[in-house]
Image 1 (cartoon, helix red, strand yellow):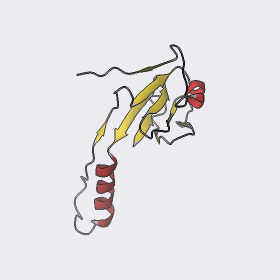
Image 2: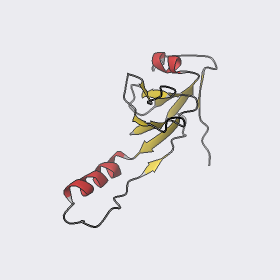
Image 3: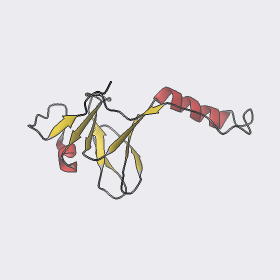
Image 4: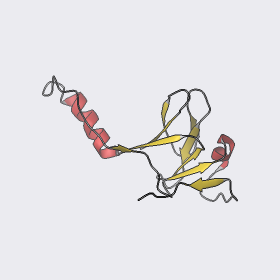
Amino acid sequence: MKLIFCPECKDLVQLREGAVRTCTCGSYGGKYLNDHLTAVVNEGTLLVGLDNNTFVSAVKNAIYGKEKWEHRVDFFFTGWIPTKPGEVIFVASLEVVEFFDDDYKAGNEYSTMPVSK
């Protein structure tokens, strides 16, 4: 699962396929492409990735293991800042995010972040 974090309003919003989701202030947004893996966001957006399996497990333990773990408050899950090409595409504006799809081809309007090793 990927979420966008707005550096201005501090909102955290889950991305969905198709429709652009924006933060509360409307400055940053994004969506998934049809592959359900690649996120398209406007420049300046911070993307946050959550591992679905560890997140769901933490939620289940917090909810359904409540009595067993009465005093435990640390249900961990894995998260990261996606940077791999193919995982995130940054575009110039929200308007480009809106019309960007799997067949969209543009000049220098978009870029993927380089992989750092």
